[in-house]
Image 1 (cartoon, rainbow, N blue to C red):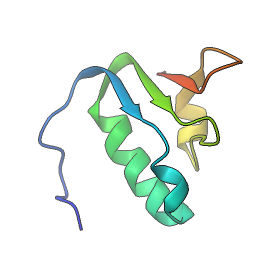
Image 2 (cartoon, rainbow, N blue to C red; image 1 turned 180 degrees about the horizontal axis):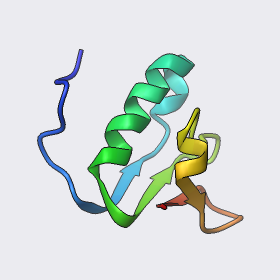
Image 3 (cartoon, rainbow, N blue to C red; image 1 turned 120 degrees about the horizontal axis):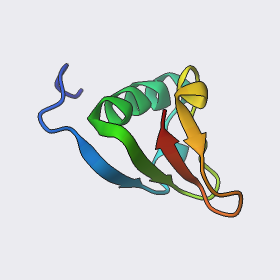
Image 4 (cartoon, helix red, strand yellow; image 1 turned 90 degrees about the vertical axis):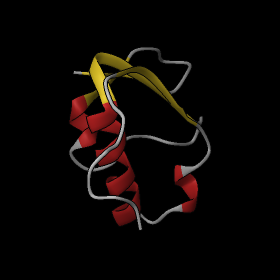
Length: 74
């Protein structure tokens, strides 16, 4: 289990590639919550090629490049 609050934050970019595919959807949403809160406004999240934001984070992260899984916090 992870701490309830993030320790660090306000990152301009977070790389999280090929990790989320190993978690069920409920755990993916917990991870996305922490990643989203850790990103600065307008920050970028880079995922693996087969990963996409789940749940409400599909609307809170905008894909910025069609060929690559790079998302920006909106």
